[in-house]
Amino acid sequence: MRLPFFKPKRFEPSFPIIPLYATKEEAHSVMQQFADVVVEEPESDKAIAQRLITATRDDTRISAGLWDGRVRFTNYRTEDFNQNDDLKGRKLGWFIDYYGGTAEFDEPQDTGHMVFWRNPVRKLLIVFGLHMGPVRIIDKDPDHWARDDEQK
Image: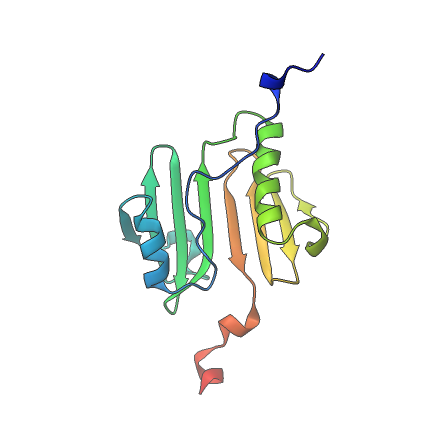
C-alpha cells in the first residue's frame, strides 16, 4: 500500500544557481542574495581559478571559481539530500536535468569517490562527490579559455 505522505521528495535547491561564464559582478550579485560573499584564494584550484567567491549559510556553501573575471566553475556543497545514496542520486539527477538532461551527457565515469558526467553539447562537466554529495559544474568551452596571446 502506497501512502501519499511517503511520496519521494524531489530535490529543489534552496540556493541560487550561478551561471557558468557569468561575470564576477553577476555571480556576486546572485550569491549576495543568498549570503554575504567573501573573496578567497583558490588554494587547490589554482590551475582553473584565479579567485574564489563564496557564500555560506547554514549547511550550504556556494563557491564560484573565477578566471579573467568570469565564472569558470561553481561548487555547491550542501547537506540537503545527503542522508542516503537515494537522496544524493536525486540531487545529482536535478543537476543533470538542469544542465540538459541525460540525452545530452556522455556515459558517466565513476571512480568510487566521484562521478564525472560530461555534456559535450553545452561544453560542461558535472563532478559529484559520492561521500558528502558536493556538486561541481565546470565550464569546458574552449572559446571561454583562449590564452592571452591567442586573443590579440
